[in-house]
Image (cartoon, rainbow, N blue to C red; front, side, top):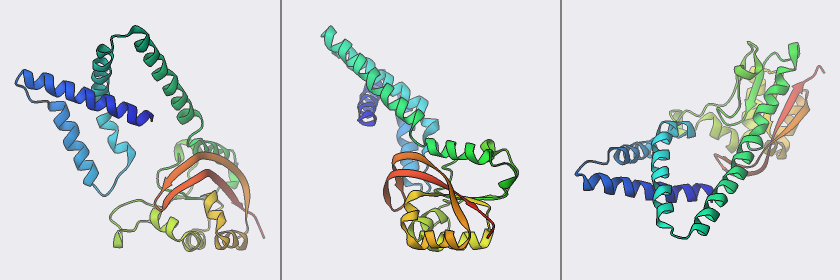
Length: 236
């Protein structure tokens, strides 16, 4: 709802900006740049949210113009005030959720790992790539492995996608190859009996579990009630 609302204001602002520019017989440079950059990012096989960061300031300008246009078109003062406070209320709820709850588990689990001290010798993150803080949170010079998400792997399947397609094989292969002292994985992987069996055979026990999100978009679909689970290897 919130994203759709801002999209309406964005297109309204883009239309206002383009109209004003064309009336002055000038090219709407900002709209052209946003359109071509969005097109380029859309056809790029490697997509990440951070690639949109450079467009945000320009998109905020368009959204501001759209809000100004829409607000000026409303003649009823009560309707103006109601809409104003409704937008503030809805966005405060969303910002509070996205800042305090959504993806919070990635931060909490890294704080936990930092407190592990000398027991933390190596780490594998069985998550999507770039989904957790790393050395900036752990503050230790240890080997850390996580699945890559490069689009240039053979057969167009990267580590991140392989992990979700066949988690039992991928997790078993990496544990055998890298022998970590700790590992982090999604709770959905534990629904696979072979994954649980692999952890037990390699003497891993669950040490902590942190809520991460109500839902998350993975390479194989949506995952509901998303948790990050920390396992620690113990001596046999």
